Image (cartoon, rainbow, N blue to C red; front, side, top):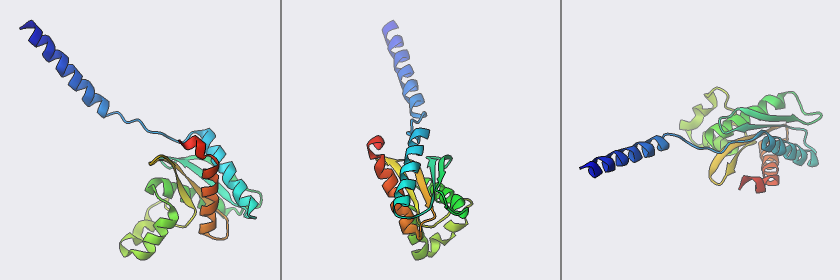
Length: 163
């Protein structure tokens, strides 16, 4: 009888431990060092193409981690970059894809009304595998597609760190 009681207690404690462990999540997130590397590489990519931009890098929650504004980038580019980065991290998608969805799907048109969202091309999620750990937003190139190209180039520069 004593063995059955001990086995029951052990079983119950293992079940409780398993349930407890399932309620704790472990997530990858954007470090300051990684954010700064992505921002610098993105500004450099745009500068090489002759674009004066601002780059914002946010963590998985959309909180700003790094912001770099190139010489001669317009003051409006700061807000645009931050809005695009926040939107991309929040939606876990590129802002260009979101813009296309808004334009084609009347039901998605109200996405632009979400506070803090900026549905213009130039926001790109940063992923480790399939997990979004943050996003990059670029403002200032002559077109959202060019902002997005710069963001992708910046992320590509740190691809080895995202494995």
